[in-house]
Length: 138
Image (cartoon, rainbow, N blue to C red):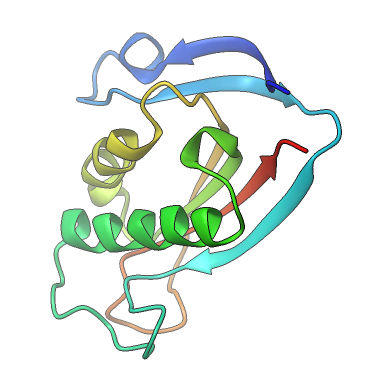
């Protein structure tokens, strides 16, 4: 089973004023399979819940996306099964760094995406949180 990605686009075209390169789409249609709902992932270890030491949005986003990849794989899938992400950032000035970094993990995947700037996350040192949904083919 392959997910149908409707109206694929790249953020280079939709946000030409920003240095972004994310493969996204307007809608994803899935049939059958196993749906995996991911808790919002933060820049901390999945094993011991310790935060990474960095306060850099790029490094925090790498850890968040590594967690998402690891959880999808533990559920029996791969990043190509990712159909939706919701990105929460605490400072709009980090948007390009966060989205550029996330884009490295979703190249060719084209999930739907919603982005929000929020006042704060659960811990003051967290700059980014991303939750996702994956549908793993049957």
